[in-house]
Image 1 (cartoon, rainbow, N blue to C red):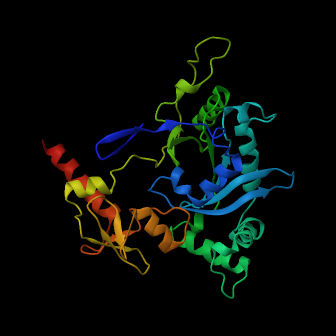
Image 2 (spheres, rainbow, N blue to C red):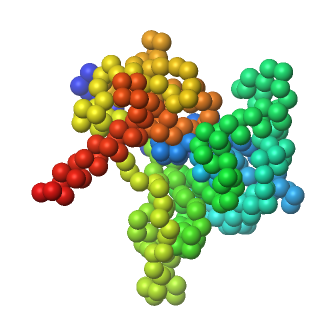
Length: 329
């Protein structure tokens, strides 16, 4: 990869986390503060726990709630050697933690066991006022679920996200099999690059894929042919982004964007970013500040002031019109 400045290219060099002297805990903290790195802009997520212990002494890295009300387990390993040198398989470790979270039946239990201790640990990041950590946890979690219409689907399912700079074949094979049997588990590669004193991250979602049979490890050197892709339909579609909408003319530079159900306003810029009180930032970063969530469903919660419609609605209308025009040809 190269960085271009003043029409000159500078090579962005691949480095390892070990070369950067970064530990698993460092990666964990980066993701805790910037979970949108492994989130789709079409979903919201709220981090509710870090290093949560279960009754058997196991500790899950990060815990979150997504906009469908699912509890999400995020497990992190620095590199492949950290995966293969463990006595317990990476994916099995995550499954055990997910199983323990499946016992949580209501918001009160999650707040008491996970979210309130998290708020207490990072109290400087929250505006407690006169509230206790427990009271604030109940308020924030209830609000998050209600605004995402997920109150009635709280923890009906659990999700697992595995993050590493590299995965071994056995882990990818196991995750592929779990996906084909409707277990919601994903793998993200997170690799660092360096340019001068700056560190960049490249994020790739490698599983699940539309056709992931290539990741099966052959048994006894014979091709695996008896597996079929039975993965449930997922909502992780690749949808057009704000730069596409600007190009189409669906929105334009200078349009005012409002956060749905909240106070605030932002001016849309030609590059797809927004101007908020003189500060240029992404829609996601702005909405994170407004809602106080770890990651925000950007297009469903951005209201186009002129039309009164969300960016998601405007995008869908445009795409439907294009489809109808194509069908008529």
